[in-house]
Length: 331
Image 1 (cartoon, rainbow, N blue to C red):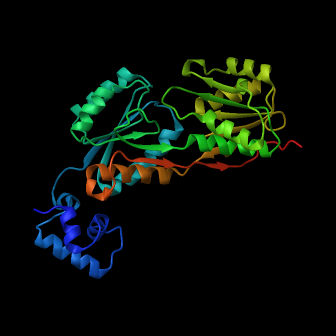
Image 2: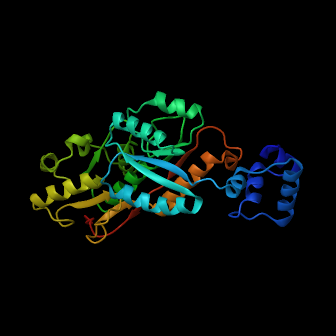
Image 3: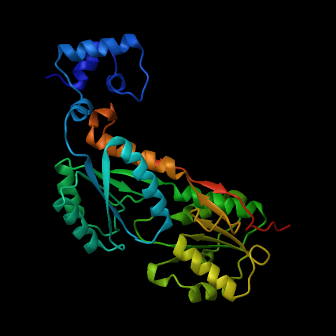
């Protein structure tokens, strides 16, 4: 049986065009489609997508390994991803590891014991690279989300440096210079402080590193935030993530600091309660995110859809700023 490359050569088209000719989601002219079909018939070529469509196989099951069970970001992502995968015949099985490498290893083992066909996961910073490499060598479908821990895998990232830059630039344009970044950090996370410094550099301001409050998961509590605010007296705060943002809000309330009259606030991720309270946020389209995940997973199962792509894919989603009423303009 011929290969997709042989079909493309015989039909005089590219490999992606062969895929499009067999797909109902892309347009190809009747003439090109006919040439591709005739070449495929001569070479006895049947694309995997048609083989699966004509078979009576059970829908594929994907394990989704996340680091937090209570996280509105993941809830919305899973909601949209479930819709996307329902259209393409995939089911999701969700596991949580609480940012623990040992728990991640157990979840991998559970996913494999449940005969999951692929794994989508947010990797822990010190995860088992040997285990991942062994699975990768067997061509087991794996998609890494939001962190680049295992360089041999396809990865989908959100440009958090850009998101931080957009937020800090908005604050600077509103007259703020004393901007405190409050963010959890670990070795696997994209360095948001790079985006912070970029905005300051563009404005011609020097960065005071004391305002970069990068904390571990255990250090994220309102009392420590209150101490930092008392010491630095920022005019604005950029807070990253729900748990951190809730602690920031509680700290400001206990200090009798009103938003935005006494202090401005932007939070990273458009949390469900942000809009009703008029809080400016950095966010992205969850529908777009889910479509990107589904597309990358589909290419793991059907490599011919990658066309001429070589090596691990690395796709980055750009965030956007939603301006509301939580930033005071300082003149």
